[in-house]
Length: 244
Image (cartoon, rainbow, N blue to C red):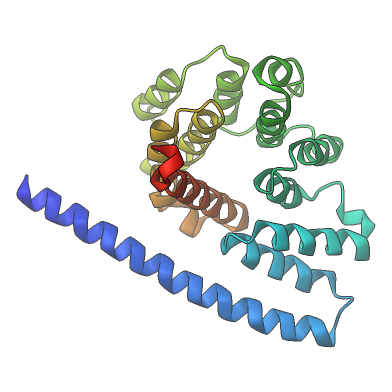
């Protein structure tokens, strides 16, 4: 047991160092992109890249401003701009964020992850009843585990049932890690909006530590940062005197 505790402490210390390294790298990248934007102020891709970096740094308002600039320069980007919807969620502009995800639904009517984010925004803006009434309808199956994740938000499946189903499934380790990544993320976000802060931090921290996104492309990496940032926000809130 003592060895396990030491290993856990070392893992946590390494994780802190890794995040610190990332933060410095993102700050350096932000500075370089800002200089490049000054020379090429009409390049929407530069604003996209800087918006991401600013989001990863936890500067949600500046990230949203860069995403807005992208759409100003190229209005065709508006409909599919899910990152702007997430940035608005974290700036507290919930109705505006919900509208972004509604527009995305016309762009992609299969992606239930989009419907989940709209639900989260509507929950924060209007409460659970209106959010469930307004859940987007899907006629086609999405990738696993989003059918079950959607049932969680519909209120017809519990988080325990969702996670147990994945852990007990006869699937490869890689597939299990992928499904757990998304399930833990959205279980955690659901716990967060419903006020179960300790449970939310546990699930979101597990998501941030999941190694699957490291080999899985842009979207999973972005959502891993969402999990890390939201866990950090909850930890910071819990540490303030008003939260005790």
